[in-house]
Amino acid sequence: MLGNFSYHNPTKLYFGENALDFLNEELPKYGKKVQLVYGGGSIKKNGIYDSVVEILKSNGKIIFEDGGVMPNPTADKLREGAKIAKDNDVDLLLAVGGGSCCDYAKAVSVSAYCNDDPWEKYYVRFEEPDCKIIPVGCVLTMAGTGSEMNGGSVITNHEQKLKIGHVFGDNVMPKFSILNPKFTMSLPKRQMTAGIYDIFNHICEQYFSGDDDNTSDYLAEALMKSVVHSSLIAIDNPEDYEARSNIMWTATWALNTLISRGKTTDWMVHMLGQAVGAYTDATHGMTLAAVSLPYYRFILPYGVAKFKRFAQQVWNISAEGKTDEQTALEGLAAMEDWMKRLGLTLKIGELGATEDMLEGIADATLILDGGYKVLSREEVVNILKASL
Ligand code: NZQ
Ligand code: ZN
Image 1 (cartoon, rainbow, N blue to C red):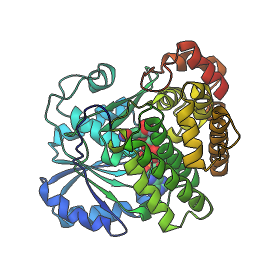
Image 2 (image 1 turned 180 degrees about the horizontal axis):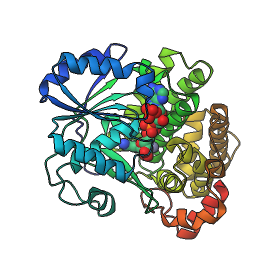
Image 3 (image 1 turned 90 degrees about the horizontal axis):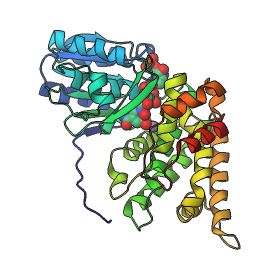
């Protein structure tokens, strides 16, 4: 573990079939006014809304409804939510939903009392909050983003055609998150698999960087193996609690800052995927799946040793009698087979991207320098073309 770092994660987790009961332990810690953040209605269909409202009422809370948070929450919706929070002086933002609701609640928490436009301040200028921050709690209904235990908050601005993430600090991370794997059972298969690929890619983004011997990489390999194993059970039997519970737990550990310790981290698949998302509003995990293979095949020569290790450790590929590059490529081929078994979208064209958008998508792609190769703009365009 080279370098210097600190590690602290303030989010308390409650996990398992009875996890929602613990909302009763958390609620008394906050004032009476709760802004109930949720999405397009899935929680009303599967009964989670009723269960949560009952607990809020039995704890004497006054509820301020803030539904209709869309997948890939927008800057306009953020401004609306911030107004509800400020006008009603709410004491707690309770997000009940997937990553979009959790991300949005975090954004509202730092925007309600912000004197500036929150999009400009946090997502364009990347400034840190200097106003009162409202506490956030989450009841998670979709496994994937890790938003339940991190400071990430991704907001989309359709007018500017930008989808940008801000990673806030400890003071914005959820105070608690409730993880009941049963709550994810009503997810459509496509959302389940998008979430699974999101988890896997979060791990890849941190793993494919650096060349030192680093405990984070061993943890990453274990998490990747668990995701692959459980995903193949869940794709055949989505009702398998054991598999779904492992997927949910792995999602949290894939992106709660643990496995990035001592790593420079890459994140270019996410930068490409988010830019595609800004143009197509497509499901996050699918945007990642569609750009991953062209990206990894392109950077492989710059990080052969790590891609070889990935092939051997995660996909059980033998290196005997092969060059390092051959072994490494076989690892990516095994990953592609797995992605196909899950039915992931492997082309951005299938997500609504068209050739005439590629230059704009390239402009919207932030280029980062933590991975094995710093891309030029031309290389970004080439990867997008290969993903089309
Ligand atoms: O809106 P509702 O009706 O609830 O439906 C949602 C939505 O349509 C549905 N859903 C969620 N739980 C369900 C369910 N449907 C049936 N049963 C359930 N139990 O699934 C759809 C997708 O939900 P969403 O919250 O958008 O998905 P996800 O969890 O993948 O979140 C995506 C957002 O998170 C951001 C993404 O960019 C995107 O904006 N990310 C956040 C990160 C972070 N905080 O660190 C990192 C990620 O890389 C990601 O960028
Ligand atoms: Zn992601």
